[in-house]
Length: 340
Image 1 (cartoon, helix red, strand yellow):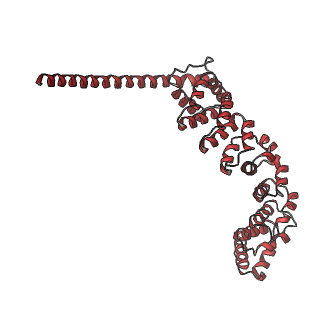
Image 2 (cartoon, helix red, strand yellow; image 1 turned 180 degrees about the vertical axis):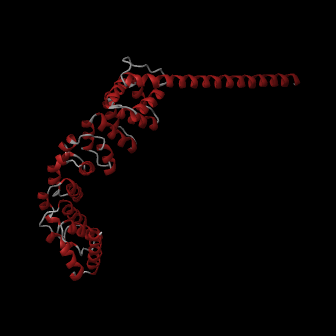
Image 3 (cartoon, one colour; image 1 turned 90 degrees about the vertical axis):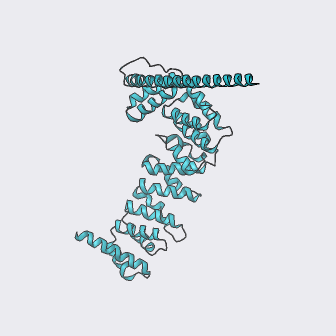
């Protein structure tokens, strides 16, 4: 019995010693591997920079297993130092050397890997994977990934993104803004406007406003009378920035009591920016509006149109106490400004 116990103890000590040796060896192997990866990354950093800048014509190679390190260097290069010419060479490198890697990442079971791959192929314009991404969108996936797919397709294959935008109603306005906002040129989106879902229509009108896209003024003018109030409001807002003096007649229907306060405010903001000579009579009824936003916009428009005399009359004779008070404040501010 004692002999068996001693044998067991010897075997146990031997196994523990073997396990310890194994762990030490594995730790050393990992350290050596990480050291080798780090050395390779430094060499690749110089090589890819030389290739991107044209100092070398042959493409550097990506060592198998180091694709993640290559990706880090490619991101850093394209984000921090690359010119358009450099980016073109980086994209050519990715297409030639990283295509298979990104196909694997796009199929990965972990969503964080897939999301990172979407961002990478979008930044590096890896158009070859667009059909694969579009096909994945039709599968049962989380909403977060679905939104990212649409944004990625905007960069890689706008027509595929537009096809999705014609049928998906669950994408939010902000999601649509993030997607369409990746387009440098809105022409394809504007051409398909009538077929798009509401979120994308609103996003396009918002981007026309944000980018001062005067070439799409015909679309904006047309949508100021759209039956959907949200589209009307976005169009009216866009027109406050890109409209011409002749467009103020489009706002006349909204300078009425039965229109919404948002539409009234936008109409007044347009008058403030465009300043038509005969606008003062249309502005005066709104200085006594119950909406603070409308009232403020009315005073701004009145001053922009040179209505100092009318402002003085409002301060002394208007039946609404708040209108008189506001007019007095604005008049005093204007007088102080002129004195100074």
